[in-house]
Image (cartoon, rainbow, N blue to C red; front, side, top):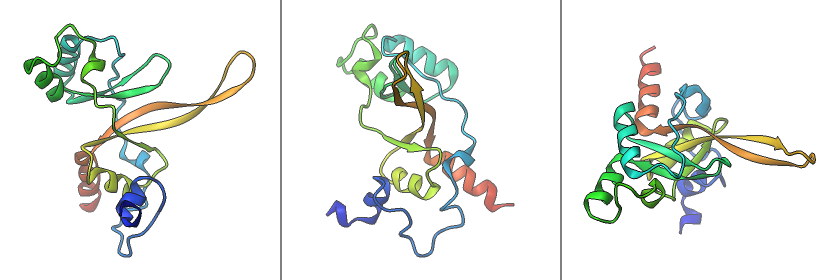
Length: 165
């Protein structure tokens, strides 16, 4: 049934515009949100250190990215605290023990309409930008760079600010 669900099709990139009466912001690109650079944690950061960093910097969540650039998942303050307090993780464990490894990604060139469909089910999406990289022998590969983390509040703030203009 998900293949007949337009919102699922949009979220997964199979359809573009399916709304007949789209809001004014539907086709605006994600890059117009002017997201701030994200706080990124490496996988070896301990749960204790992750909690301290998130609290100190005022973030609720942060992507966990390997030094190779591979996005491993998202760590959230509440999930980390809950896991430690429930005994499922220790403060000394690496943050990879408490990450969400299922998350949605969206590109800078994707529409706010697609983002809206993602945020109906997910609390956040990781904004990525693909970049071609070349190694020493001249072969190339595409690498995804984390450009930001976007939430429903970011979308709502953008829409409400621009609605008032």
